[in-house]
Length: 90
Image (cartoon, rainbow, N blue to C red; front, side, top):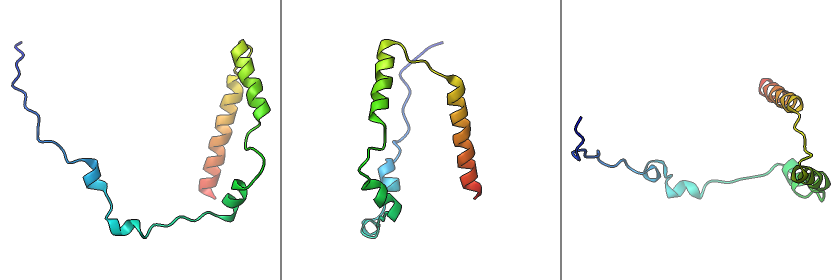
């Protein structure tokens, strides 16, 4: 089989920016609003995570003591899927 340099690429495709760019007039009309729940969550003084627990897990990983429980992970994933399905049906 002979390989040569006769390949010529097709004309370049238009960039995705040209195809999907919205008109400038629409940009001024867009608006975002947050619900009262989002505002209350944002103003909450408590951190959304347990920093002490995170440090404990980091230390256990660093020391090789952290054990992964695949059954608990699977149960959590299944429960999350059930919740998502329940929300869609409601």
